[in-house]
Amino acid sequence: MPEKKSTRFIKYHLPLVLYSALIIGLSSLPWLRTPKIKHISVDKIAHFIEYALLAATTFWSFSHIQKLTQRKALLWSLLFVVIFAMVDETFQKIVPNRDSSIYDFFADVSGAVLVVFLLWLRQRRSGT
Image (tube, rainbow, N blue to C red):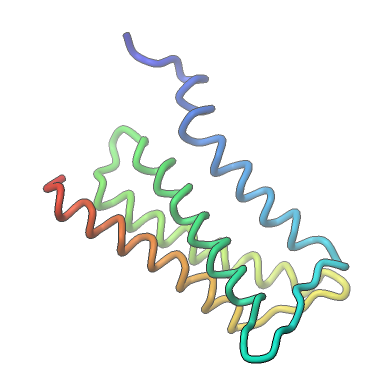
C-alpha cells in the first residue's frame, strides 16, 4: 500500500524544512558566538558539521522525489546546500553583532562536499 502524501512529506521532507529553519533561526541570533580556542577554530568545525548534516538531510529529502535519480539527487543536494550557505552568510551580514565570512562559507561547503562525496562512493559501490 503506497504511503499517503502527508506521511511522505513528514518522513522525507519535513526534516529538511525544520533543519533549514533551525540554521536560519540560529543565524538570526545576534548574541550567538562561538568560543575562540588557540589553533582550533570551533566556529569552522561547527560550520563544517552543521552543513554536513544539512547535506545529508537534503539528500534524504531529494532522494525521495519520485522522478529524481540518485545521481541527480546528489547533484541537486550539493547545489541546494551551496546556495543555502550563500544565502545564510549573506543574511548574517544584516543581523546586528553577527558577521559573515568567506571562510565560514568554505567550511559550510566543505562539510557538504564531504557528505555528498561519501554518498556518491556508497552509490558507486552498491551499483545504484
